[in-house]
Length: 413
Image 1: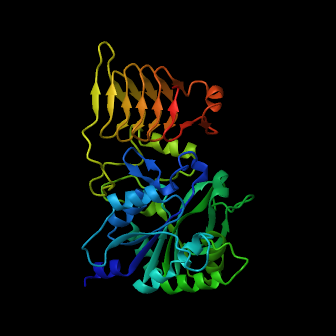
Image 2: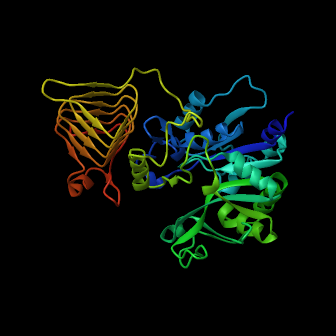
Image 3: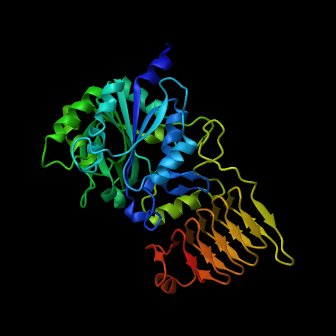
């Protein structure tokens, strides 16, 4: 076995994919957060899985929980590995192995599945979230974890101080050793030395030494007062022992790309919409086109996107991503992302919008700054996104004015 093969064999990955995603409602009304479509062709979980596949770490358990049917179907269609010894991507539903209850927290989710760690006997365990948009060569994080002989390494990124209450906030010494940690502080978060406007935030991605992880999980499970969460309970107890380090995500490099450090938490409707708009920038900070770091997903057997003029109504598509099977007739599309099978009838104008897929837009519609979920139908002449007061009477509207049309909706009929 080569040194590289030995490294791969010594790594087990557990991806937390059970989130309800309540802040993304109504997109999460019938699906778990990691199954929410993104970027026309993908699901949120695809980005975490691509990071591990492109890093050649292929012993992966995906821990599911709430509303997981569409996620399970996607994993089966897009991420099925067969006939390859010791390589797998397996979905593991919550099975109530330690009692008749769902997972109480992120640490409890791993604790209830600790037998998979014990069976595989890895040297290290990667525990990652499944609902962020980013690229990471995980090998680089594991290499640093090994080099420092760390018990735990936490991926970290700089974020504005105003967002500190959304993250675990880290303090480190000059060597990157963690010397302080506070989960989602409401007031006076510790800022980065010399940078009072930013904090160092945990990305919720961890590399554990196996023995350390198992001991921490079993000790935590005995604590009735614990919330059984990595941020609230596990990390605060581990870092004072001195072998916990932060990994600077901005130092992670991706082959074929000059820009690094892009990471977006798409936990709200506004963040979800904004991350789509990032894809449409003249020089996008997140590339979908790097052949040295391909983004795998499930592509249904569909024809290419089709654009046709209808009489004097000309098709105009600019700064947009249009997925296969889409059909745009005599309409104008600006700064928008269309998922598979998005159909637009003549005379419509769609701007700064996200059509998740299999949508039907009637003739003469005007749609602006709107997210339209799967299988929705919009009647001819409908106007959405121009009068938010009226839109709020019918639809969900985000704090920043993004209108959301739910799955299977029929608008204006």
